[in-house]
Length: 205
Image (cartoon, rainbow, N blue to C red; front, side):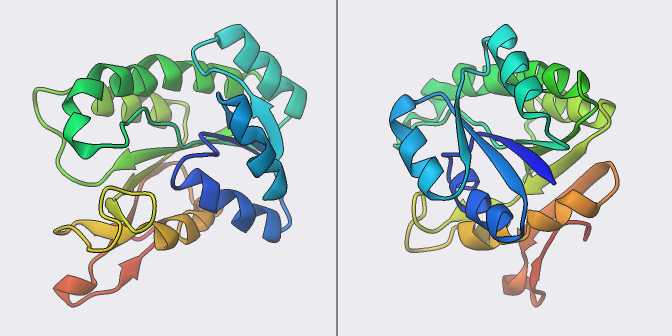
């Protein structure tokens, strides 16, 4: 399968890329940072340097690769959790304009869209995530609601946060089955603290 990952250098994308390559897929790894292209190539991806907000360039990049699936793993979050509120407008733009551009690019090839979302309650005052999910489901695509990520490269590198949560390595591994589930909403969450187990794609509570 040919798979295009937007956000391939993010905390999930950078782990998902080698898993997909190992599984035998051909993967285009998109980043907006030229300095990250070499690392993506080392992991087995075909680097694509592109800004999701440049709709024309994005469509050309996706069309040139001819993917069967487009993974949306893009976010725009700060390294410091204390700055999350200050980045809200930037991250919301990714969920709005960025999502629309990716869906439009995928639609030109009838490629399936699988997109990252969140599993905790969405504040009533914030519609960006809800609209993001609405667009993906309307594609029709798959929305993966990830629990709070912890582990290397996250805001909780050594200690897990309160549930809902999942280790970032498990999150990447449990993303692979999304390739085979029908359009809709699915969860990637670790509920072992509640007497359960790490649950992957297709297992909704």
